[in-house]
Image 1 (cartoon, one colour):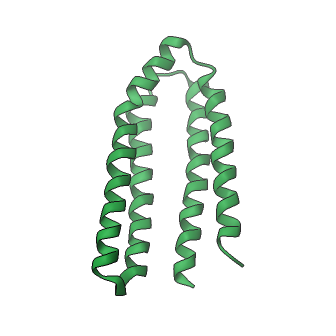
Image 2 (cartoon, one colour):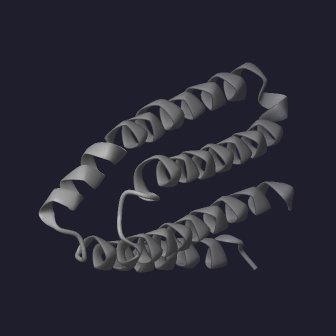
Image 3 (cartoon, helix red, strand yellow):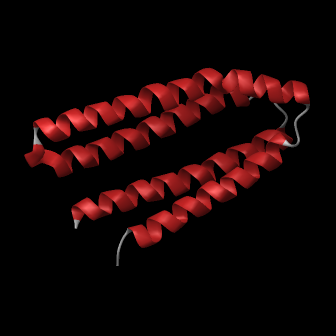
Length: 134
């Protein structure tokens, strides 16, 4: 069985359900709290998306083309690095911007939404890794 037959539907389902839960949780905020959340998460979003993902892609491409005989190893290491960075930035964002600043009625569904989304993403990473290990 192709690992992507499990990985892709799980990824899309996780992202979709996570999005719905996130919208539900942000709908419970006032306009001031929503602005505080958006401004507070901005540096983390910029760092996560711009720096870490571009850096991972550049390092992967450099290693891939400089040592093609180790392509599978670099691919697996890149997936592990991407998963670790994603988890680190998520937890860092929760600690820095969410906990202690917002009510529990927002925090609980928001954290569940992020966990569901991350579960889908990590399942996709696992499916990608499984294609190399075969």
